[in-house]
Image (cartoon, rainbow, N blue to C red; front, side, top):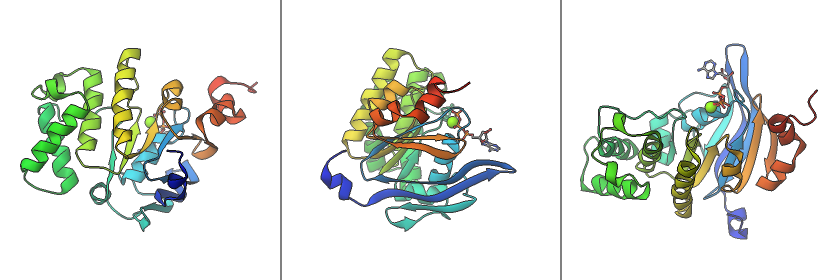
Length: 251
Ligand SMILES: Nc1ncnc2c1ncn2[C@@H]1O[C@H](COP(=O)(O)OP(=O)(O)OP(=O)(O)O)[C@@H](O)[C@H]1O
Ligand SMILES: [Mg+2]
C-alpha cells in the first residue's frame, strides 16, 4: 500500500537491532526494519544470507541472541511461537511440512485449531477451513491425503494452514520455489487475493521478477546485514543488488 494513510499507520512489526548466532556463526547482525499494517515486504538475499533464520525469529521458532521484536507495539521477543500465532503471526515453511497421513481438509483444520488455541473443532472452524480452501484453490483436493498431492497443492496447503490461523501478518518462505511458470502465476494470484484482504506479508523469494511485481518494498540482506531497503525498482537498480545477483563489480 502506498497511500498516505498507510504511511502514517503504526508499524505492525518492528525489529530493533536483532542478532542471531549459531555457535561462532553470526547469521543476523543487528538487523532493524519495520513493516506497516497491510504492507507487503519482499526479502532478497543469496543462499545462506539469513532469510529463513529471520522468519524463524519473527515467528518465535527460534530465540534471538539480542535485540527486540515488536508486534503491534508490544514486545514479543520472549514469547513462544503459539503465543505469537495467537497474536496474528503465521508462517509457511520453505520445505512444505503437511501432516502427510491426514487429508488436506484435516491439515487446514489443525491450522484453525492452532490459531484459536481450541482443543476441539467447532462449526466456525469448519466454515473457516472451507473458506480458506476456496481461497487457495484447494477445494477439489479437500479429501485427498496431504502426502499424495502435487507440489503446487502442497504450497497452497502451506498457505491454507497459515491462513486458517487468521493471521494479520503472514511470513512466506520461498512459497513459489520449485514451481513451473504457470504454477507460479497461479500462486501469485492467490497471494494477491490474500493481500487484498489487508494481511501484511513478509515474503522471501529467489524469483526476483515474481517478487518485484508483487511487493510494496524490498529489503535486501547478505551475511545477515541489511544491504538495501526501498521500492522494488530502486532495489533492482541499486549497486548492492547488482553485485549480489548479477555479479556486477565483482572480480
Ligand atoms: N539451526 C541451525 N544451526 C546451525 N546453523 C544454521 C541453522 N540454521 C541455519 N544455519 C546457518 O545459518 C546461515 C543462514 O541460513 P538460512 O537458512 O537463514 O539462510 P537463507 O538465507 O534462508 O538461505 P536459502 O536461500 O538457501 O534458503 C547458513 O550458513 C546456515 O547454514
Ligand atoms: Mg531459506
